[in-house]
Image 1 (tube, one colour):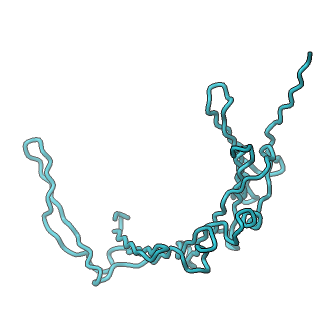
Image 2 (cartoon, helix red, strand yellow; image 1 turned 90 degrees about the horizontal axis):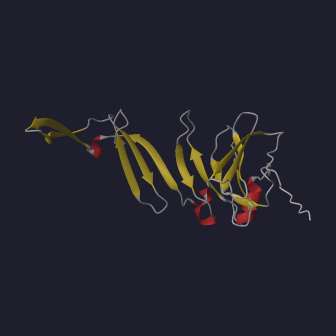
Image 3 (cartoon, helix red, strand yellow; image 1 turned 120 degrees about the vertical axis):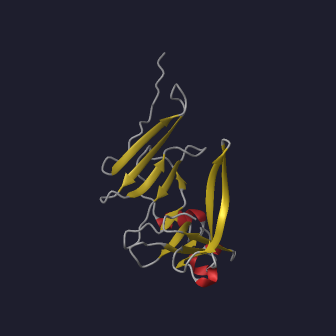
Length: 202
């Protein structure tokens, strides 16, 4: 009596640039995870496939998109699709939006027009949280002023009887324009202000 068994090999799309990763979760190799990262001609990620990662054995596909300046301003949600046995799916933004039933199945950043490209506004997935609604997190990048009155604590350290003691020797205020001031206003209007010195310390 002969028993025929068909084993479907995991074959990434060879016409694409890719990195294939297999991680074994058990000693006998019966449990494992497989991921394929596909890249465009510039070496940028364009699709990440977690092979048969869902409970139903579907691939979990995460497409990656860029704006006209080559910046990744949107982070799309992953989509489960019928497995392609490690092959590329070519999922785009419209497919992701259609699956979730919204026009913005992604988080999005509005960046400043400078080489630093810092985020000025960040939105979350879902109609109520889209960039157009203004229900977003907003950032400001400033420097300290007289009105901020940021305290500066000077400390002294002493060593007595095998004991290290630290104490505050004086308290003053930072001079104007000495600190960076980052202001974060979250989606509910709550404000957090973070001051940092020239060494990046809060």
